[in-house]
Length: 368
Image: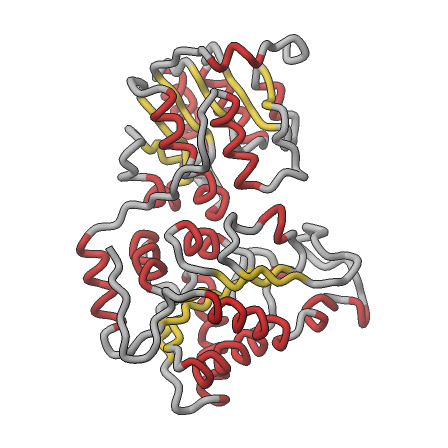
């Protein structure tokens, strides 16, 4: 059926009940957000739903183009999961897009029994079998943000990529204002964590770049991350304070909700980060990023736009996407040594030099 699928029919397809199946991960969910306004334009009268991990619901809930976020608890037992699948079937979707492409999402997609179920060419674990077709031009060599946008193009949506929207309230903005009040701008947000060990550029390197930013451009440093990254940020804060005792460091790691983090990154002038969800969130809200890429590709996994500086290792094993370094001895995580603080600092300087929106001391940019 997939071999003979007529993709041209998508240009005129009418759908009234559409579901995105994209439970995770943080960065991928953020990169999928521009698809929502595109689908709303294409199916103006449709009900749009999104199956997303419960811990990431706040990234999509409240989006003006989304009718419903359906939380999925991956830690729930068999009985709860069975009931969840029955609920998906009960909703009678007529179009389902599996943008995850793994066994778990395939089961969800199949359970809907929707008359049209589409996936991506990156599907693994036989996830494509739950779909009627996989959209062409969505393989793993295609940058992630382009891969998701090709879904919109397949349905005939014209024009450029739509904006990334994460809704946050005035209360969230006030929360950020209160936390930053003791610190003068400009603000450098730093995220030194990452889920994969092979993405975690050494804390000492982050500290070196952050210290140079504080000394050279009078940045106040704000550390961010999840609860499981608190120790990393504590080490980073201690190292910065040792290198630059008169510097200004605020550690908010593990102390923000997702919407508070969104409001905080919207207020930041620059973000220094590993390849991570917060990197994509910062880029999505318009904050320029200095991104460090070791085991992943800046082209395939980095944010779109020419305003960012994405720095990659030059080793032959770069962009291997190994969650654990397969090398031993001196070659173990050699990319961390090869990607020096000096190279990242040079990228930081290039970004600052060409970005007029970065506040200088005693100047404050208005954030809508």
